[in-house]
Length: 150
Image (cartoon, rainbow, N blue to C red; front, side, top):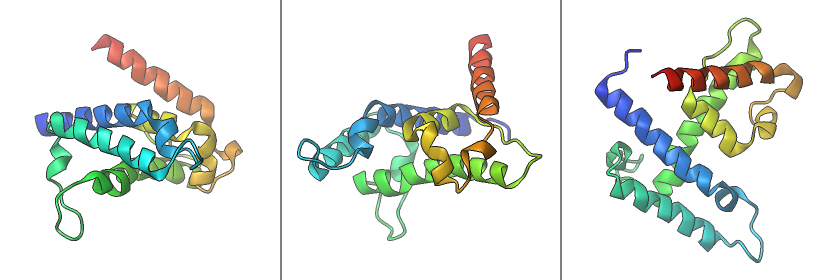
């Protein structure tokens, strides 16, 4: 796929969104407890949403299945899950075949950092031994090298 200006903008905005999620991952994805309530989680998702709104990100004009414009719940239950699902689908297809290594990009690596690489086998229905972690780390190193040469 050729990177068009729109495609590149979307990728950059997704990276910004994922960095915002990464910065708050412990609050967003930890179990509820007396110190962390569902209101705290919602407040953190709201903070991320407001920052995306301030930056006028492209996905804010997307509508949910009911025709409503994107809101905090859309960010949490649709946008985040879609981005995460795309990465997990790449890894799932890799574990199902032995000959096709998917190309992991910067977005994929950031998602793996958010969800925790140790959780991937549980999320893609694969044993940890089926996932070539050295390949994943090499992929990340190659990605970083390419970024430095740009």
